Length: 402
Image (cartoon, rainbow, N blue to C red; front, side, top):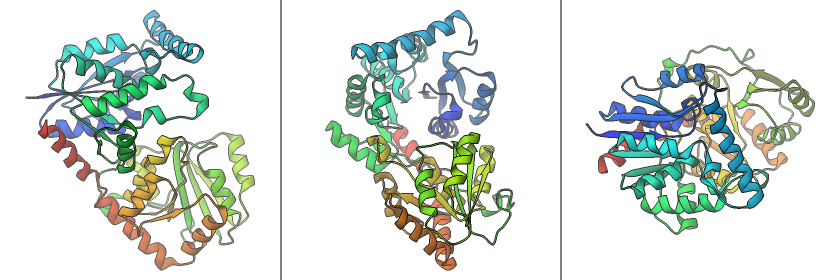
């Protein structure tokens, strides 16, 4: 039985691509080992619950005993490395993540038939594995050298990231990323082979799998807009949405899901006109999320085009909206334009102009048949062209070719 070793520096609850990929390979009959970051016992239990029971789950970095000398030493090394990059401008692998050398030793012990890396530190690990003659693939979940704003980039070894990206695009057995827009930009930027594309989509569901409850939306007669994330805060497009809603007159509900501070909740209320009712909901378990999204009419995906990596990204929420069958209202980014091109009847693209956004919202809310058609197209896309089952077939093809 062939062995596939997948490695990341996140807990699995924050690494859905790792989980989906690992489960696909386990179900295809491969022996699968996953290495990740362990730092919280409760989170570790959640990680294990996400994985197929045949998968061996191991600690790439073990910080469970958070106050132990070893844990403090590992975290201190990373902090010093980041400060070293900031104040000297000299790149060091320690600024990419935790405990590079010991992580590499663990991976080498496995002697896997195929290694697959995710995230920044894993690029450096993949580089060493290739140089030691191992067969390696890599998932560029982001274009890491083009990620984050200038204030955060000063802690990052940008030259090292650029070198590692170029190296892996040429030397890895295969690479893949989250959108065609990202793949094309990375290939052009590095003058390299083009990565393959695996969308951050979700499995298809049957209509009767939705619980049909109205836990969010009490008034079904009034149209409803929806947005969600783990955290509700500034810089996520909500201020732009509120500015646009000030120019609407149709009574509607705005539902937000995520953790929010009292101050920011108050600020949002102040930004909204009287015709808009704001409701904020707590985070729900993953298995309930689609049912809650399906209660609403329009999903809001207002993303930024800066930094450069963000412009090419298609966020998970867009795929969740399609999976749940609600219309998608998205700002103009190269990633979201890609979705629009594939399923034009499910997505409305807007510029970052409040007047235009308000006009489109009013048009949808006052044309029930048009909105119903968009929702139907969204549901069809979520269960068809963007169902994760289609992405899983691609993953299996990559590995079978290896």
